[in-house]
Length: 429
Length: 168
Image (cartoon, rainbow over all chains, first blue to last red; front, side, top):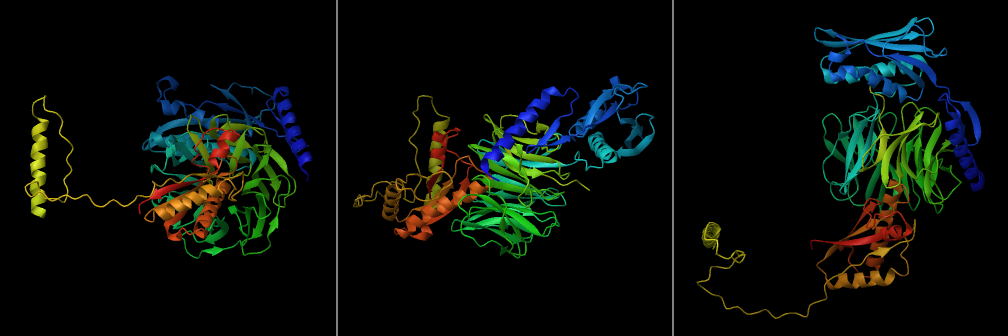
């Protein structure tokens, strides 16, 4: 594909999206992907009744009164529903095309509380889902609401719910860059490191228990694994040169990463314990940003062997190397979808780094985030529908979540500190 | 000797404590640093050591790079030549060559580009006679800009190799 048509497509997409935003009063955005209108991304209309609380809302503690807000927010952020909320559900739905009513009752039991969650079909109110969520202390209540949200998403749409996923990222303040993790809905930001040094580029293990990341703890970029349960750190690739860009294979047995000696970086593989290191690229120059195919048999990466950064794919066993980006002079930071043969990546147009999608073959190039300031480090949600990335907008550098289907977007981090390098966790078991 | 030092410390401590709770009018004492020397009762014959003609103080200037490039620019060569001569004249000094990038690129690619820039400077200096074991390279990618701006003026300053002296 040549440059001019691509840019034209991007602009067309932006114009169409812009146009559809105000024109559609039903809140169902029209989706355009790369100049081909693929139709409406229909949001399912659902209605949500506030949870029934023992003794009534006014006297209930704050966490109890806000539990249905947690549910509503997480359903909203699934980008699958158009939600109407009721204090008490009336006899008739607000919209004749509403498909489901979501309800819940909180009850005190001997050793804690339960939430009886329920989904009723509309019209008719036939119960299609019912589940009891139990917790011992009030700080665990939120987890129950998140589980209920994920169950509602899965029961009504078949998609993987993201409410219990988290996003790891880098937060920069006063020159220190520390690792943080935040819940899917932007709640509970937690600082993982306090080393007053630089940590970069976290990536989750497939079991969600560890983060591999780049650390300057010893003054140079080395690869370390952070255990989220024990908070222990272990250097896995260290020494002179550069060690960065750790990426876990889908089965969790192999780490791909980038290592430079004498200024020449290449892609390497090793076990998560740092053993069995082997180099899989041989070219002179820069090779960085490995990302695994969902089968674990191929790796996409960035190489400047052609004279500019471009994306290549190769077999993990070695060989089969092929370039898949030919448009533009700066294509980098690929992330392979966990659900289909699709890659999101960074591409420069003029002075701006935009986000694009393409098939893993390199075909079907289409813009995802265009003309919104520099984007970097896209990472897929486990549902293969959402992408988290860092964006530089004005003087702020924040982490944003975008739904590929509806193009809805929200800022995940707030405040004046730069936040970037996001990585989306797997769904906890 | 060790015993003498302890005594000297005690004397000092008493003196300092005395001043600390003494009259307000007492001027603050000169800072006295205990040394290996014994106390004053045996004054040594002090003779200034012959001063060698000193090399000028070592200044290592930054060099700059073109966008997405790690080649040593022609305007950087005289600077690196001077840095190299300075390093040869100060044979005890070790330096870290830091490689930096502007913000226009991905974090990961810029980390590799910074490493390549630092490495290009390393190669330039070692081929001109600076001992390799006195130099090491560290890439900071785009993480440590000198100019926080978002224009070409800032970017040009941030695409640099910077020298940091470490202990000899």
